[in-house]
Structures are given as C-alpha cells and as structure tokens.
Image (cartoon, rainbow, N blue to C red; front, side):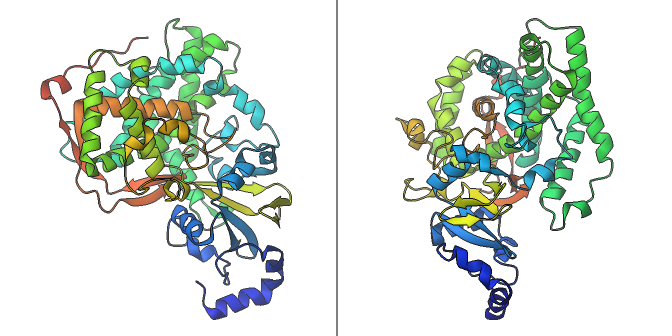
Length: 472
C-alpha cells in the first residue's frame, strides 16, 4: 500500500476524480495510482488477490485514470458475452502484437470495425471444421510419437522448450500436412519475441525496438505459407486432410495471401498456450501419482490400434486431465477490454479508454465454487462435471468467454487430449521438482520456468517402435 505521503499527493491532485467511483471498493491509490501493485507480482495473482479482498469488482487507478478488475461472472458476461460487448474493445494487446501478426487475423480486429467479417474467414470457424478436426487425431498422434521418440534419448529436458517445439510440429501437421523446417520455427520465435518485448515494455510502444532481423523473419515466415498455398493450388492433394488442403477444396476462391496469413496465425493462436498447458499437466501429474497412473492405463488402452477421434472422445480420464489442467493452470489468465466511449458498468461511468482487467485465476480456484480448489483432481470432471462447468462458463473460461473466445479452442482441446494420450502411452514424463512452480510471462501467455526432467519409456520395445508414416 502506498505510504501516507503518496496517498496524500494523489488526493491533492486527483481527489476530485475519485468521487464518482466512491461506491466501488479497492486499494488506496498513491502517486502511481494502484499501478504499483502490478510492478512485482504477476498480474493474475494481483487480480486474484483483489477478488478475495474486494469481491467481484475492484476499483484500480492507472495513474490518474480509473479502471476496474472484474471477478464477478455476471459482470464479466456483460462485458464479453452480452450485446453490450460491442462497447468494449480489446486493450493494448492488439497494438502490442500487431507487428508480429497480419491484418488478416481476427485477433487484432476491432468489434466496431471488421471483426465479424474476419471471423467468418477463419478456417476453424467454417461449417466443415468439425470434420477436419476429427481427421487430425491420427496425424497429430504420429507427429507427437516421433517427437517423443527423439526426446527419449535426451538425459535432461526443459519441458517448456521441448513441449513448445512438439506442439509447433503437431500444429504444422494439422495445418499443412507435415512438420516444418527448424528455420521456420526459429522465425516464429523471433517474431514472438518482438511482440513480447512490446507487451512487457514499460515505455510507450514507439520507443520499443523490434529484434534485429525482425522484418526479414516476418517476410520469410508468412512467405513460407504463401509458397505452400501456391504449390497446393497448383498440385492439389484430393485426399489430404491438412487445413491448407481442406480449405482449398471447400473455399477454392480464397485469396492466397489471406490463406497464408491465416495458416501462419494458427501457430501464434495456440502453440504457446497449448504447450504451457501440457507442461502444467505433467507437473501436476508428478504430484498426483494416482491420477498419472490412471492416465497411463487409459492411454495404453487407446494405444491398441490407431488412435481415432471416436476413441479419443470416449477417453473420459484423458479429457478430465485436460480440463483440470486448464482449470488449475490456465495458460491465459488475464483478458483486457476498454470502453470505446464512456460506459456504465458496475454502477459507475467508466471513461472511454479505461482499463478493464478480467482474470480467471480467482474464479478457477474460488473455494465457494470448487471443492479443494488448489488440488489437482481430474475426477471433478466426471459424472456431469463437464456439463456443470462447460468451457466458457462463469467459473471456467481458459479460452475466454463469448463470441470473441479463442477461435481455436476446440482444436486446442483435441490437441491436448491427443498429446496426453500419445505421450502417456509411451513414457512417464518425470519432473525433477514440483516445488516451486515458477511462472513468468511470454507473448501474453503464462511461461512455466524451471520445469525440468526426462522421459522414461514405459515399454521400451513398444515405445521405440517406428511410428506410422504420414500420408497425404
């Protein structure tokens, strides 16, 4: 809490601005407002603390500018789901990541402008996307099995790094039908680092420099997909199930550059968040050996023959582990919005441009809603648990809520379940130490730190059997 002098100075200069917000609880502002609370701890931890201390809505001050932190499911729904959502645009994140992505992505589009049109173009939003999604299980299983085989030879692993690459490779198979060269992955990371520097900058964006070689990497990265689109259009593969081939069959008139940009955007939309969720899952499974043993048993059953979407859909424990990982350690924990014009919310009038912070950290662990919320208990999702707390509901929204929730949420769930089934059937993911679980921040996503270990083959001969060959 700011000291008496700091609070006095804020009141001296900005005290009159506090009167319209007197009905809202919140910490006492100092010279920096309440922004100082966010200088040390992670923002999601601050938002969760506010939820415990002040309830569903907390008044904050970014310097002299008022804002709110929302931990009330009804208020969050009002901002993200109700017809009023059109009054609230994404916060600074859209501008922060703009140099890395392209104008064709729905992520940075404004609700008040062309968001709806861009959302309609997204391949994962198409009526045929469920059929495409079902066809990705076996190709992704093969890609993941290949990655696991290679990692078995490593004596020590940084799970954040290796599962990020494993996820990138599986996404590539789903997107274009095969793994991509390491040079493409390197360009992908460089562009992400450029966006991350802008997200975490304490200075105005105009003073933040992009990494050396950024422009060239962006040209190469999206150019790689443009080349693939042109090649696929010239020599189509009628039976290929990758997103590129499927889109060209279903939408033959789509602009080549637009499709290339959408394919490249798939990786930024989910590689960091999905790999982070996998790290969290294996970290928790090390702490809860009974849950890990049940996962291995179900995964071994699925490994008898080819893994299909139908078999995966019946794997209740694997689904439960995925859901519990997303509840306890969601990769995205803070969503920001800002009113386009002065807007009435929570009984006060928020000025245009005010900060609205929405976090799932407290609601995913609210003891009034969840039994033993700090524990990792996949069984809570059995016997109607998924129906009680569906994705995007008041106390469970790892992919956001409402129409602007992650367009790739369904794909992420299939990937997570495929990865858990494939990895657990072949290896035990040993984690060296489960405490502490350090968390940083990268590209707007939680970054697990210091989660090291190694993969131990469950059945050495079976684990080292050559994986099936991907076919077009």
